[in-house]
Image (cartoon, rainbow, N blue to C red; front, side):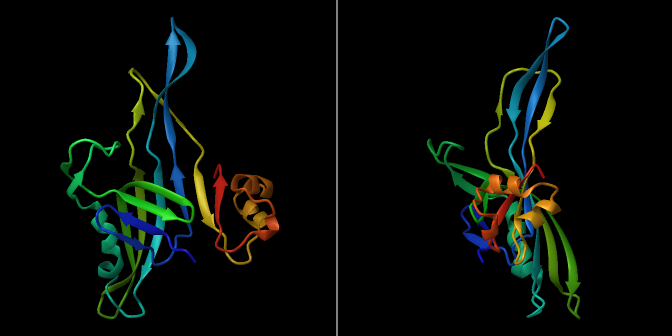
Length: 215
């Protein structure tokens, strides 16, 4: 089965030890409630914020008793550390090379999903220890922010945010059917089939990455 993968700028890549059960992508746009002579005249688009990606990962070294921090967790921690990066003008790939001190960009990919961003936060819980007290299992909650320039229209004043529907992606497990998953997420098999381009729901294979619209 294909593993979820993190490609780290100028540092190669590493794969998740165990694929996440799911990951979530949140997107939002900001709108300004325009008014004219005391009358409401609709919403005026302001900006689209970068997408936010979140997931939980499990790492385990209980078989050989190695420190799970050294073997796995620190690979993610390193993505938070600023280092000197030689880069062209951001977003264009052109211009004069410039040295910048910042954490590396990270591309998360799994199946046909991919997002380039930066790791915004890591929350790590150590949940199993060896007899000597060495942590040998960890749960890491990862939050990434899409790396892009925020597009914003001129203007100021009070702004309201309109959140687009969340996108959740789950991996189909052995024995699960489209109807079963639809019931679990409060939707219908037809909606799931349409959202994922599935022509024959009976041919849903284990390991398939399934988008859950509006979850």
